[in-house]
Image 1 (tube, helix red, strand yellow):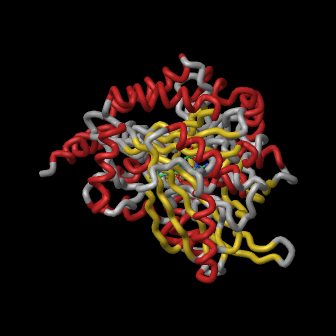
Image 2 (cartoon, rainbow, N blue to C red; image 1 turned 180 degrees about the vertical axis):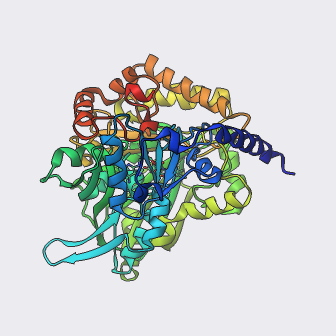
Length: 525
Ligand code: FAD
């Protein structure tokens, strides 16, 4: 019996005893008419699924899980709670790929968007062509980005802003921001939404955009599920390329690495033409504790591993710049020349240049093969003590000395990908709820740890040390996928947006029922 399954066995046993002790939704929720109650489930397997997430570090048991057959079903459920003398909490659960229980609802109802997606069986994504504004897609909030990709490609078009991993729901990423190496150029996914249908905390289905019901529109985007359930979003599409030239360059010096990253992302802003500018830019740390290739992408040829390993031995940390340029068959020559021009004068170590040519789908879906491999080894559903944050450009060197060169090297436990890449504030819309640093350029840093069931607290402690260091050093960090324990921390997180965040909550979800797992409002804590 594999030892890594023992904690799972213990958790399952505890779960069975806990669930059997709960009274069931009939005693916990107000009287519910049959049209809703027939879609409520409280069997052990369903409750178990909704009580966990990708983080695998905590559990909250809902009273029931709702499997809606239509948008109206979700609206009726929310209205029932809103009109009840004792409202119950409701959380839409996309893929449950949150880390700290954000899609959970203790003693409330979890709306299983995945089961809704299955019910809709492919009808949740509709591509339109408008002679004046071009292509756009109307996509259900329960849909996966991978399905959006495949469906839009049938029309030769695709969204422009992506996450690295595509098995996430539209509702889930739009509640955060949706970022990746495409953000510097196209903005986060929330900047590429034209219109939405949202079911508010009062159970009303409202169409909103930046012109119509704009307060709701801006509240929901990056709104951590607090203001409504996203039923549909209209997404910007552009002609899709066929292929991608994908390049990685290694640096031994952090300052050269970040200087080049900033230079490359700024080439979009009029200095070079669209044809030459990059479509994607990220960066990551390579250290001895982590494998040279990881689940996020297997890129470096095996034959190169010893050379890269000795470079790491020499410098402790190596910085890997990752860029991509889209092209079509006829523009292959131009892309090679364009990349050459772009990389001229950069400070990478010349003998450490790597490139690949892949299809557009292979590139966008690059994380999937790593996921399947980990799943087959039973290593996907392990704890994930992740820390994601935004750091202002002016403080990235302080962050490097205090965190990468001190905390990370001393603790010597970091084993997952560590992402580092910059983006432009101007590509974000400040009217939206998402909270970002107040500087033109800021970096996203992602510590994407996987751990055992017995040692995730070590990583959690390291995350706490990092945040403490930032606080002591005056680094104005904003967490991405934020997780806080007090309302004071939430107020600090949102800064000048906090007041309007609270006002919008009273306006759209006055009984404070939606997405309680974010633990923002007092009665949810
Ligand atoms: P859930 O975790 O189910 O939900 C997240 C929050 O959104 C909850 O509060 C929930 O109540 C709310 N919510 C869900 N659906 C709706 C809806 N329809 N309407 C309103 N609220 C809703 N993020 C990035 O930005 N870039 C990345 O590259 C990236 N890569 C990732 C890779 C992996 C392997 C994983 C596990 C996550 C990654 N993420 C990334 C994080 C991801 O964006 C978040 O976890 C996000 O929450 C989406 O996950 P989900 O669809 O499972 O949503």
